[in-house]
Length: 509
Picture 1 (spheres, rainbow, N blue to C red):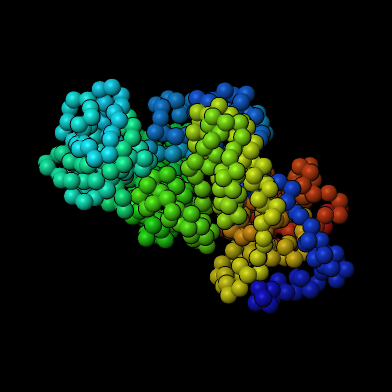
Picture 2 (picture 1 turned 135 degrees about the horizontal axis):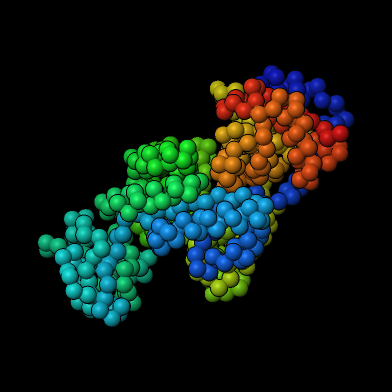
C-alpha cells in the first residue's frame, strides 16, 4: 500500500478523527463528478468565427481553440487569436489557443478540370517535373522528392487512402503507377506511402514563419505535424524559444503522431514533447485502419505514464458536419477515448466548416460526461511499486491518495508552473482538481489537462493568508461550502516554481 511506504502520509491519515474518515470512505460510493473532466479542442474556421457563436461554443464546453495553419494567412490567424481572447474574457472562461502547423505538403498538383476519375487497372503517372495541369494520364507533384522515396512494388495511398496506386517503375522525376483502387482524384489531395518512408522534413520554411506568427499572439500550444523522431520536436522547440523570447513566452509542444516511423520512436518523441496528438487520419492510411484502435490505446497509456498530455483527434463527430446528431458509432468512439484516459477529444471540420458547430460541442460534452460517470477508478493500483524522488511530486500523489480515501469534495493546488496539477491529472480520480495560479499563461495551458479546472489567483501572499484566500475563492465559485472537506497543496516560500512541499486537509468552516 502506498500509505505504508510514506510515514508522514500514514500519520496524517491516522490523526484524522475516525468518525470523519468512516463517513467519507462510505461516501466514496457516491459520484463526485460535478463537471466534465475530459477537455474539448475545437477548430476555428468560417463556420465558427462569429463572436456570438464562438462565445456560445466556449460556454458549451470548448477548452482549447485550434487554429489550423494549413488554411489562411498570417493576418487571419492573428485576428482569430484576438477574437478568441476577447470572446473568452467575455464568457468568463480562459481557453488555450493551439497553433497547428501545416507540415510538409505531400500532395498531388492540380488538374485541368479540377479532378479526374481513375479506373482500376489504368496507368497513372505522378511526375515531379510536370509543368502542365493534370489529366487522366498523370499529374504533377507538390512533393518533389517522391521519385526518390519510392521504388517498384511500393503502394501509394491518395485522398486519405480512398485511391490506391501500385508503383510500377520510377524513371527520373516520374513515378509510373497502376491504379489498384480507383475513384475521384481532385486537386491537391494528399499522398501517403503504405508503411511510411517518405523523407519530407517535419518543419518547412512555411512552418518556421508560422511559428513566428503564433508566438506574436502567444499561442499556448504549438502542434507539430508529421514528426518522425525526437530531433524534429527539439528543432521545433528551439524555433519556438527564439520566436517567443521577446514576449517572455514559452509554449507547450504537441507532437502529432501521423507517420508510421513515429510509432517505434514514440518514447523519445514523448520525452521531447509536452504532449502528443493521436492523429488518426494520416496514421491510419500509413499503418492500416485496423491497427489504429490498439495504437490509440497504447499512445494514451504511454503519454499518461510519461506525465505528458494526449489529444485524440480525427473524424470523431464527422457526420455532424452535415447532420444535427452524431452516429452511434461516433458516440462510442468518443466515449472509448474518454475511457482510455485521453486528456482531450478534438473537433476539426465539424466546428471549422460544419453546419452545426455549437450542437457538435454540446453533444461531445454530453458524451464525455456520460462516459466519465461510468469510468472505473483504480487509484491504489497506480501507486503500487511506485517510487517518487521529488518532494513536489510526492506531495501531489499524497494529495490524490488522501483525498480519494477521505472522499474530499475537491483537491486544490496552488501552483506557479502547473506541474503539480499535471501530475495529479495523470491519475484517474473523480475528485475535481482546482489549480490556482497567479500566471495567466499557466492558467491557459492547464485548460488542456484532464480533470483540472484552472483559476487565476495571486498566490504570493504569506502561507496562511494564501490558504484563506484560496478557500474564499473556492466558496465564491461554489466549489465548496460549509462542512466540505478538501485537500490543498502549496509551497513555501510561496510563489516559487517547483516548490510544492505542503499538503493540508481542510474542512470549510
